[in-house]
Image (cartoon, rainbow over all chains, first blue to last red; front, side, top):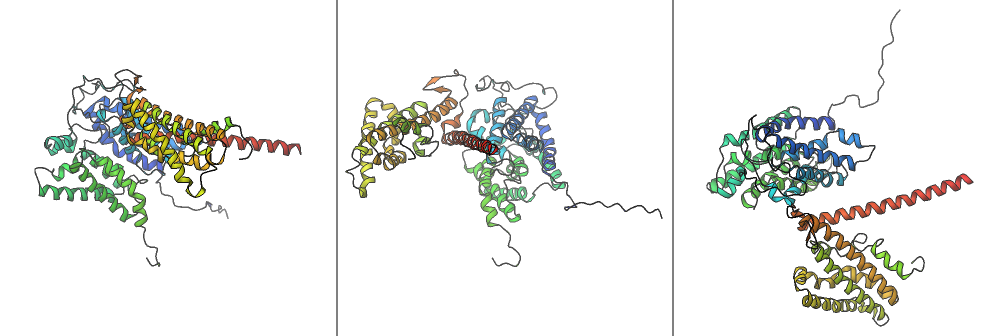
Length: 338
Length: 219
């Protein structure tokens, strides 16, 4: 009779836990962004790396300053500020002066997140708020693009504008600029070959140019089930169909479908920014509406607006519509009429 | 009124505690529209000061003769008189500023801050208090306009009153001159004001609590 007592583990519910927490969700997105980010560093050199670091620093410092002392470490360790800084940095031109990138980070967290009550309270995607502010504030520096030079030899060649003193203008000697594929299309009707568009060997924002690598990251997120796949799919379908329609009507004026999908901030915006769970609709039907709205607006702004790129404003606009979409797409409660 | 106040207190309340812009949030239209430079803000503030003091003075003198039923239109006529005076004076003396302020000088007539002071204050007190209150309120308005105008001009053009502060290489923050800059700056200043007020209120509550606990410990 030497039976040992059965071990009982007494524990209150919930007994089954999923490993999905805010830090893991943020870490997944950061991992997914890495390939495109590394490609950006490869194409644009150490200046790109410094720009991303400056924008992350701006975000983290703002979060640190404006969070309660007790909640500080919790707020910082969930990685959301780092992710915002990373996303913002990836939408910036690689030769942007570092102080501007830093201010973008401060605005992204300060006006985009903290002021709304922190993570989960914001109406607009913080990274896009930061970029919109920078675009409105420093329009020249934000639309000066540099050629992708690529390679290890050029990695340590800084762009001369990177270390511009705070509040000072970029020295005008910096003449290495080159138009982005979108700018070329809009103002000179020049198409860029599809291979460059897909792999990112073009001028443009440092983390946006490589469509394929961004899609690889998206696939990783899909496998980890950390992505609301309906939103990017809806964006691609609606933007694609709309472009197809325009292209059939006037092929000389409107770009082809592959150009729409692989140029500018389309991939980064559709996969990583529009799907931000805080600022996109909660319901399935809402996700479809949200995505198609973004897609149509992107094509509208690109082809009929004054700016070559419209992803930023399209997402901001639909962010503003998100509460409305949520209200009108609430599922019917079982057993109730209407 | 809890207690009879001195005319000095009447004036000071408009500048900080009851600031027309930061606390009452009145007169937002000129506030956002003409504060893209410090000079414009100053001109607007002084014009408003003239109109408010003048009309408060006149309304207070005539408060016993204005019939209650038509008081609003009477105030508006008095205000419009002073607005016309300042409009033509600016046009004659500073035509450039007059051109920049444009329609916003005639629009002072419809500034709810001015009409509000007539209705709520000048028509109910003696001339001395009415004028002191008008001075304080328009002083507070001027202070707010200048705060906004200076911030926007310093960041937007790197200058104050047209004098360059940071040299020719300053990178202008274009958004600060544009309407969004007005909203952003005003929002941030309001945020700061509310923060200060809240802190002060909290400190008062804590002070009272500590007094209570001292009394309790005595008992």
